[in-house]
Length: 258
Image (cartoon, rainbow, N blue to C red; front, side, top):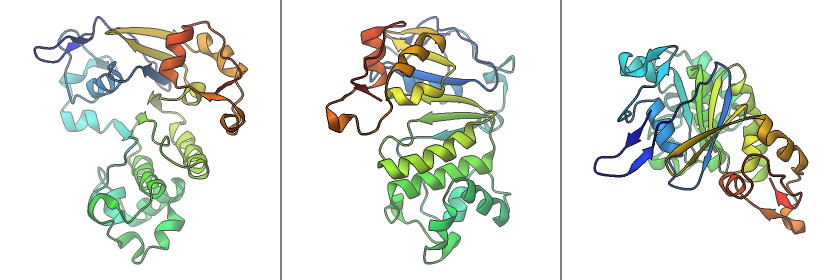
């Protein structure tokens, strides 16, 4: 499969990989390398200029667009909420959901408690750009939406990267619950994100390199995941930087903080 924007250079050339159901896939690469392009192709925001993408053996272009996108739940760094009620934001994509189902999804997303404390609870308006809510609260609502949708495939674009440590920890636990039994694509900006990956897709200069978990597992296990390491002199690096420097088999130094 290949993709190029009109009158532009190829973003992906002759990319080929297979993802078994239930696999966790990490996508790494420099800024602008084509990581988001790859996930945009999966949900048909764009189509390949050559080749095909198949879901369960069927060309994604043969699905009705609404049916295809029903198979995906997406969480991004910047949560997408609408100027309507909390309950309607959670139920986006599942208009037939009952209030009980909405509240159950919020509990699983660790959002129920803060929602109950809002002036009108689930009927509270989030306001323009949801500025009345914190970043963590906005992400929990989006996470509740994903729980409610129950899509078999997840796309995660580092949804916790902009959060403080305590909030990130709580949301990460909920995300790991959501990932169980689902095929997951993670656009990785930090090495710690790759710990759960079974497959690594590295996008570089239009080429897609496929690396199995074994190539990175040893290096990641050697690293200390101590969140305080940076304060004690550790150097924070990101996933793209590490793979560029060390390739498939390099050892991650213990001074490199996850």
